[in-house]
Image (cartoon, rainbow, N blue to C red; front, side):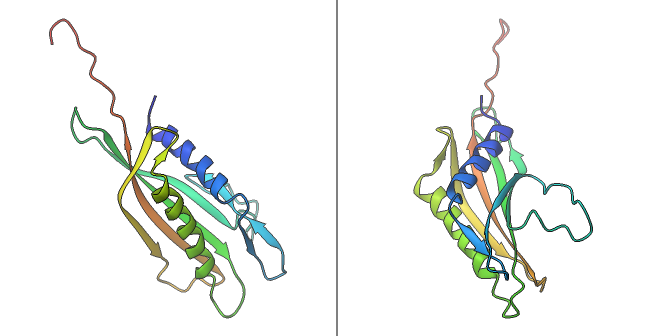
Length: 156
């Protein structure tokens, strides 16, 4: 069965696989692996809880049912967040590197889990406000998902 939920789960698995060996380095010189979450960040454990950084969220946005004979179109966005306390404020490069890796992965092999195909356009956006030391960016994508078939009755 194809659905937006299965697509989201498949994309979480693909992002985890793509970023498996990729790390971000913090100001203490520690290499941090990216966490991948579906839809939302985990609940904070306290006011200054930043354990979920660096992260990629895989978020369902909209689904368009175009007509009864066409495949459905699902909008999924990826939100990337890192913390970089370096005063040079260049953390957007780490965000861009993750977006580049994901875009390359999805465009080189456009079918996920043998059933979901990425469509154009693919859009990327960086934060506009200065949120240092946190840097955020996003990538919007569109995927085709098979529409349910009408169950015919004796009256059709």
